[in-house]
Length: 297
Image (cartoon, rainbow, N blue to C red; front, side, top):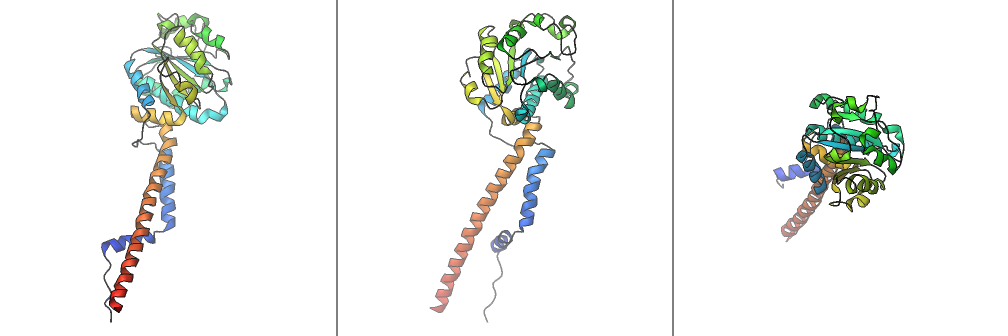
């Protein structure tokens, strides 16, 4: 009678992994996908150098004031715009940069200026950082669709009032400001690729103001201006996630990108494990064949 060998720890692990219940695997994947969406958390990610420059530029201008070019966007890009604009506003508020939000654009006015007011209020960014409307941040009326609107908005008396109808002379944030030359830098948020050309002409060429580009699907046309008016640039949801990671404030960007990262990591782990199982089983089978051959001999 042949004595039955006791299974080793390695064999037990192999048996467990080989006959792993696929239902448990499905549950793990679902949790990995939905937990980061419900409760965003910081996970190590590879960050684009431009995103690092973006945040460092804001830190460098802490205590300053920026002109926030808020281009209205079509509904097709709202998810990326939502995450990106929220992340950029939080970075500005966190590092104590005052913000004059100026809605412009050539697409549709449906998302601005109410959209940016909603972003600040819905996520409580003003309360979180002690920002007072009219003193630390303000939203202006929608300016128009053409480059002439951009040019006119750089002279503040042309705007006359904020979005709520308050004359700019009654808004503390405008005290001592006449035009874009009195601003520290520009944040250009946009989704139409030609906008960067307009921004360079109206903000950089005319006033010498560096631009932080927060754009959707316009990476190629924008990167050509890096170092030539554009101090740094980010793009959409990925840019939002990188900004949140760099400032330590996980939010929408992370909730969109973290599930992708987690699922990719899990698939990689299971791919490695499946290969280990396959080759381990094959090696064990070959060893058993050799042992049988020796016993017959």
